[in-house]
Length: 355
Ligand code: ATP
Ligand code: MG
Image (cartoon, rainbow, N blue to C red; front, side, top):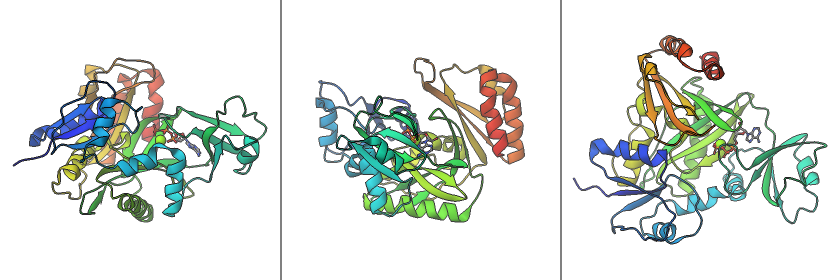
């Protein structure tokens, strides 16, 4: 069976996990750092995907983008710039947080901000992640000091919680989706995700129809994630990620097909079938900390370590816990509690509160 090689622009954990997902099928996945002068050897039948959305112009990055099988150029173009992304969502009538453009022609940003209400989140158009490139504004705040003229602003959304939908589409337009996953962010960084909590049919249908519409519009191939706020039981889209996503990591052990394999299947033209849950699953992000061998005593827990240098707040790994029932998942969290640092017990508490 001849499969194409999947070349992934980016050299972080997502590329690494895509590589791991390809291994059992001997599907070759080659992550390449898309920055550099030394051109790389690409074959005509390689398929090029990304694990990062944006990189500065340079010879290797341009070479990857210039390959005839570079996938999803249009979605990347739309998503890397928050203004284009919000405009795409508006065009497709996908509900999102009310927003305004804050470009250099906005003489007085305070007036634009005030049009959004009492409070707003200002986001750099390009380059932000994990809550970086954002600041919060409320009526009376001076915004000149932080405003650099290349931002959008969104109304501050009083959400009850945050969820995300991860889905995949192939070249034939077939689509599959995981259940909505509930996410907890602290200071803009994802701490934990629990899937399939609510089983809310109308939320799931809304989310699938929006993400499906977006992927169809962009003729997207592969996995895309959509982050949403839940406000009074209804979804409002926060943002899109044209790649595998942190909130889908639970699917590595929690589903019959992981988001990484799903992405590869879509890119390689392999069957795209509906993944099924293997149990109740959650994901716990390891931020700026090492892991401990004792954690492997926790029933249903698997560690994924990225092999990166540990720096404060940096995503360096995650642990997935998958159990046959919610009661069993609660039991595993109680097993884990005495093994984590005091400051991390709040993550366990959040998970328990959801279950
Ligand atoms: P990611 O790491 O997911 O790419 P990011 O840095 O791109 O994150 P966002 O997802 O836009 O940024 O924001 C990070 C978090 O900040 C959100 O998950 C949410 O908790 C909070 N947030 C963002 N926008 C708003 C908003 N309009 N109202 C309320 N909270 C918000
Ligand atoms: Mg986000």
